[in-house]
Figure 1 (cartoon, helix red, strand yellow):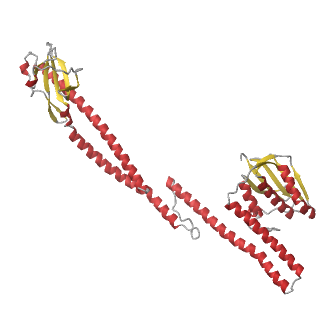
Figure 2: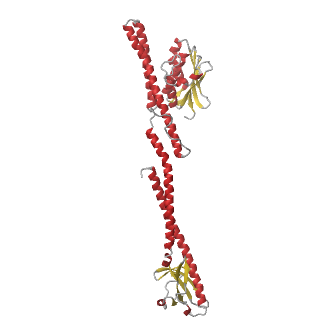
Length: 441
């Protein structure tokens, strides 16, 4: 019973057995009521017959063979008693009963009475013109004999219905389980590295079809992730190989005295630092993807944070004769400050590296569709249309790029902060990167 097929069939059989049991009980109850009402009606008719036979007052006109009736094709006999005013039996179909006292007092003209320890169906009526009463009865046990043929017919029909329903159930269960088996086989064969197209069966609008559609969508995401991982490893290999080859080459160049020691060491130092920066950002990216790190939120002043980030980049801006300014009023926000500060510093580094003479950080408290935003703008050349989303991809360096990981890390941090990092054209003429905090988050 561990399979879905077994559980569904077991549930179907239990439901059918319960249904059959309830049906049989209700049927027996219904048939019992119908037969008893019919027998009561027949006995009441026999009372009318007895009234006619006793119209002349002669009790000898009665005998036990005169009260016969037919119920459902079965001939049945009824017995009688003539009772006086004191419930004494003065005449009966069974002569042994004559002279005895009837200890049971029937209620009503017809019903069920307990006579000599057994239940009987009876009809009772006062004889016309006499003080005596006639009591016609038939044992209830004789009625049960009628159940045999009815129950056999009923059980045969129920059994046939059970077989038909079970066959339909087996067919329905088979139809339900078949696509699940196909899906199980497809999942068992699935290998994202070797999957060609979509290996899962096409789903329909049923629940199982929707499950298949979900698996198809999942397999697409897995394959895309697999491709991204392969591409990521290839890019890492390429990006790490370039500075390593430079370092390796200049080591031999120094040894062979092709370049001066000072020139070679400067290149080695720069490429080593590039390697350190790249490895550090790879570690940051790996931690963001693999570790569910807790970032405690605190209330910070966004204007103050922007000023601190600008102060950190001010020496580089002064060296390049850039004007670095902060705009906007003080704004309190509850957010993991260290991570937001990391985004601002990275965006400012990019702006200072690519602009000509002006960088602006603006705190914006009123943004359509967002709680607030921080914009970093410059008057540099900006990005081409095809670069606006590509700059957020890993290892996309573009002009004057270093590792190609900074913006990818910033966007991932922004998503973890329940915000979004976007690019647009600045009114200053250059690039505008915006961190927008979502409403209600």
